[in-house]
Image 1: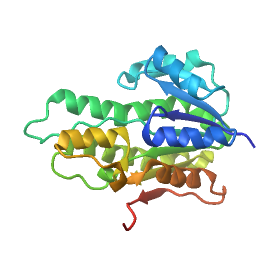
Image 2: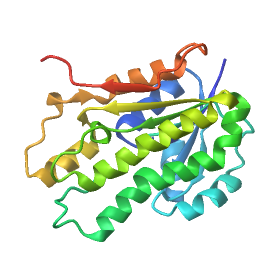
Image 3: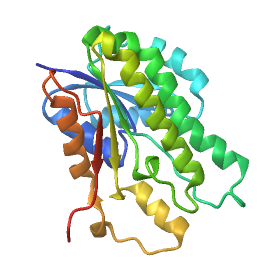
Length: 231
């Protein structure tokens, strides 16, 4: 049966890998894009997809963007794969870096989930958060990003209990370091050379995500940690 999935972060990395897999099997996609130009790029890459033009850095605009998109009454899954990272010590990281990461990585997913939740309930669907190993353990220079991801875990944990009576499943996936454009940026910030082959392939994380989505309805994968395998 064809399903309908709403995704953030479908333009690159893990989100793009998931979108490709879902599209290839014939599912319908609703893709969140920061502006009309980006929306045109995404829908060209995924013919038949529905764009939602919403900048996740401005969560106030999400409710109007969803209303303007003319979405179906039922959505089978919401996959939060978008995120930003800005490393720095607590002593040096400016306020804007805290505000932007908490907004995009935590507040925007909470607001988008709130706005589309009636449609997910109608499908007895699933909300899936692509978190990070930093959502379980925060290391030096990762305070702001880790705080946003720890908050995302709290959001998922609370939502899971709240929505179980409505038949909505909630999953958090915690990938280790994955070969994505974000990882390249992290290495640049860390001042290190980047070798994608040293890290998890985004396709491997996508496989874990699809496993959680496709699990029979009598069970839920509440938390899934994806770590690098032996080399």
